[in-house]
Image 1: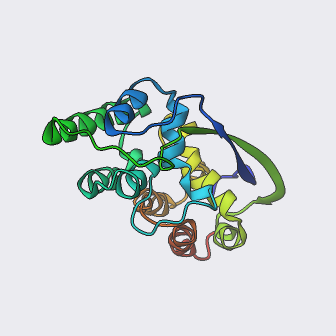
Image 2 (image 1 turned 45 degrees about the vertical axis):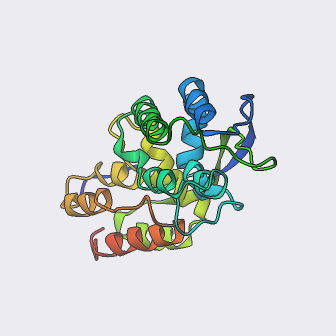
Length: 221
């Protein structure tokens, strides 16, 4: 096996703040705010919910779907938003375009009525900065990666498997990218990692999937 650089294990946390956009009280305003908000705002509400301890919804993985159900009381819209996997889009702009289409379609179905929330149930657009820090741990051999992943915090799992896709032009997770440095029979493991259907799972479930793949590397050094 070719000599691989050490895999440095990082961890991360979110610093969340208000986006500066006015709160949303109806579906038309939601469409209008999504049209102009920063990409980081959309990314936060679709991709950073894993790291928010206040987000615990077994049915929906994104904030817009939760608000559509609990705020607007529009289960039809909530279901349409809930099935969106943001990682299937090549860019946040493509996701934004699809969201606007969904909102406009729903407004057309309901016209002239515009769903509105009660006072106190407004939607607030947020955004976050990811604070990354080095844990001081590293992995030197592919065969040791599974055990390392088992010990990782959920912040590390998020950073290396999910957030990494935003940093990579190829939308690769860090584990796959590291294993690809070797040319000694690890392509099956890389393919299996890339094949994990992760978006509708929590971070502990994702960890188990990753470990299951990496353990199949077996005795390779």
